[in-house]
Length: 150
Image 1: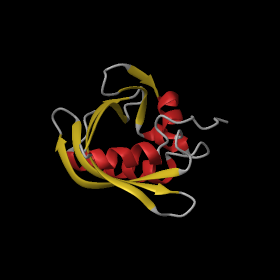
Image 2: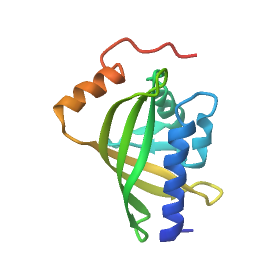
Image 3: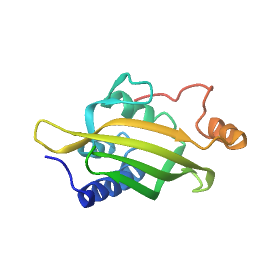
């Protein structure tokens, strides 16, 4: 069953809160199961297993992402959202914000076997600021050694 405008808005608010608070730690990450299909299509259109996506969310253990919705554009008919989002990369040890980025994110929905809404498509675009891109690479250890996975 298709979600209404208000249901989509509540779903996305819950998603961003859950991702920010629980979605980046192995012990609590499965709270995101309420939001994602088992297979998710990202920018390149290649299916990604939900567990692989979770692993990538834990690839920066020293940094916690805090996502804040700035604007939601909801398409009830097509069951999708474009979200203007601010993301703060927060150093876990100190609580300091390492870099703040503006994102434009597309989320598409489908329903699981129980008829519950789930995200199945995600396309993300970051602001094209070269200085911030360098800060992102440093904060997230992009190009460095991957962290040990439990």
